[in-house]
Length: 116
Image (cartoon, rainbow, N blue to C red; front, side, top):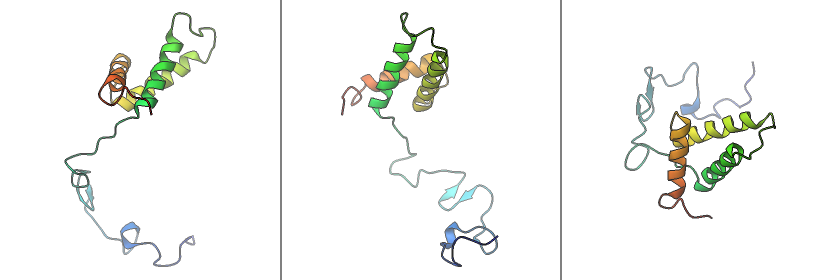
């Protein structure tokens, strides 16, 4: 198969195959085993979710699970499941109640209560 790139146009560090730089399994350019503490200042990188996104997800969850919420709509359980999954991923928790609690904490915590 013909390459889309002219010969030697791809930097050596991105090449694979014959002539590529060989490393032992699990070794990356900056260390072993995926340790990324040397790539950031002060330790491993932690991403924080946008409080506005978390606030919107909580609002949608509460609207769908309210006693007078849209129960006849067949897509409601799927939508709730998607919101809960997203909150679990954003908060790093594995349980619905823990995810909701952590999400509410993110929104009400320092810097989370403001709207942009």
